[in-house]
Amino acid sequence: MTSWPSDVDPAPRLLVLPPGDVDLGEADAAIEMWEHYSHKRLDPSQRLAVQVIMALGPDGRWAAATTGREMPRQNGKGDEIEVVELWGLIQRGEAILHTIHDAVLLASQTQQRMLSVLEGHADLRRLVKRKWQGTGQQMIEMRNGGTIWYRTRTGGGGRGVDDIDRLVVDEAQHATDEQLAAVSPTLLANPNSQLNALGTAGLAGMSRWWWSQRRRALSADPGSFGYVGHTAEQVHLGPDGAVVQPRVNAGDRDLWRSCNPAVASERGGGMAFLEEQFRRLGPDRFAREHLCVWDPPPVEAERSWLVWSESEWRACSAAPGPESGWLVGPVALAVEQPPSQELITVTAAGECRDGGVGVEVVAQGRGSAWLVRHLGELRGQGVEFGRVVVDPGGPGLSLIDPLNEAGFPVTEASAKDLMAACGRFHDAVLSQQVRHRDRPEMDAAVQGLTRRDVGGRWLPERRAGVDVSPISTAILAYLGHQLGPVKGAAFPGVVWA
Image (cartoon, rainbow, N blue to C red; front, side, top):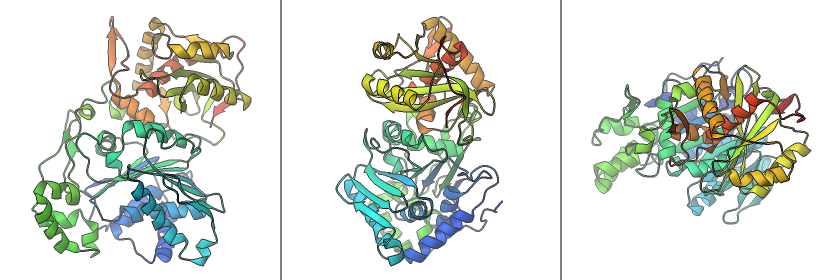
């Protein structure tokens, strides 16, 4: 085990260290390499942020599956993530998807920063195989296979990029649930993947997903998570789970230094610049931009986690299993699409290596033709499944005929069966007999899930303002697993890695 630094100045107001014993050796080596080639030095707070991201658990995997970094503008978040990405490209051969808000220019600038390091030294320059700098197609490919794509976030911003080791959500205050649903499945195939979110203060009307990560940092049981937040706020969760945000005195000069590491490290314009900004912007805008004071959380976030509490859901988290797989035995699939009929979700359920029933989103895509083709590809790879469960009472009805015509073992779940499954799945979560691996699309679905009461029982409410397909298909797949394989359906011993 490596001890975490205790002398970080200024200390972050919000700090969640990855769970368990950790090794910071690789993080320190990455920092040393970046400082050598960039001719810059990280300040103590930046070093801590890199260590939180790159901390290794006893199994050699990332100690945190998801990390968050909040800090006022122009304090060096870009340098922090560049350290991680440079190491990933050169030493690990990682496939990295760096997503940015809708400013294409910012994507170009971020790529150019990395190229300036790689091309500024002969020993790194020879490692670059090729680069693309066209608008919307920025990419750097290394000779060892390491690749980084720079994409602006859109509904299809991650399409066509598969098997990602690292997903970077830059300018996270602008990220939406829908955009994360589009890009986060790219992490699915990798057993040691990581999502890194970094941003400034949450904005009213557009930072629901970013607020969900901050709430996770404030929760008592954040799971496989790390978070470093430099903010002037003393934000916390009340007894009812609501966010409590005491008012901040934007004119308190001591706060200015405490949440701006660049000032403490004597980088940039320092306190003189902040004094001028205070006069330019006024107290409220200054507090948001330079003290990382967030706009209040959206009402939806305050009403979230209604079916299970966040701590109850996190308690069911399962660490990534051996590379040979984490679900074993007969596995059931479930398919569904939201009322918009945009994105079909495929979820698997099977016996979990560490006990209970594991559920996981295994694919997302558009159109019944994609679904049939994808399941056919799985079967062609030797993957067989006991049954494919569909709810004929929902938008998934249109998927039944194509699946039947393709010869897949389809089971149409009755409303009675589904209500019973919801009750059993609910109890299994409370008793931690359901296991899941931390995935943003699943977490967002559970957080946004509401119940539709039907005669004293309940069904998932699909019109809750968020795509709940990941959790509703998990319940369907759980039902299929309980029913067992369709007679004559074959399955291998290990299915999902």
